[in-house]
Length: 180
Image (cartoon, rainbow, N blue to C red; front, side, top):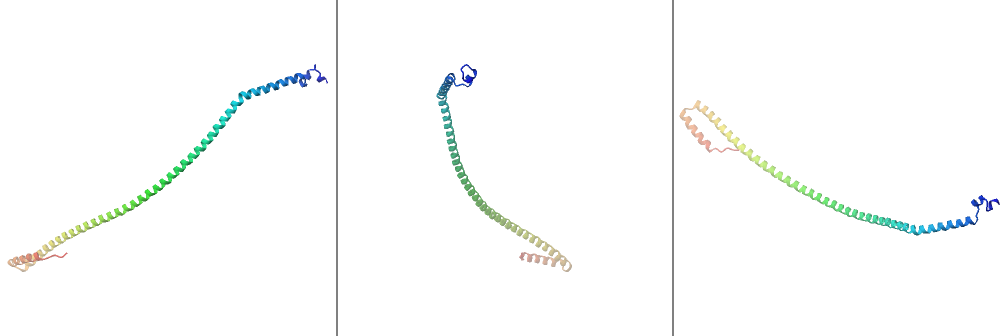
């Protein structure tokens, strides 16, 4: 009971007397008033800030989705272009191969034609050399025959007979046709 007496110092610390309850009531009223004022002053700006942040985040998400969609469309367009380029590259390579084959046949044909011309020219040159060699051989044969005939005649025939036979041989050689 000592603790409940108004004059004791311990009753003020633990006791629920009228002073304490009035002070507690004022504290609660002050707290409620401060909460009301703060909510009225700060709640709306904080709420607006959070809503604007939420809207900005939603806009960023939408923007990111749109960017992703645009990127996918660009990717599809680029893939289409790449496919068209691949087809074009393939057709250009095919055309180049066909042209190369055609050029190869033309070059081979031209080379064969040139080889034929070279062979014909070589054959003509061989024929000309053959004719020259035949002429040289004929000349040598005539010279050798003349020397042999001269030696033969010198031993067995006199000068007048020699002259007659030489003239006859020259006339006979003029009418002779040589075989190839």
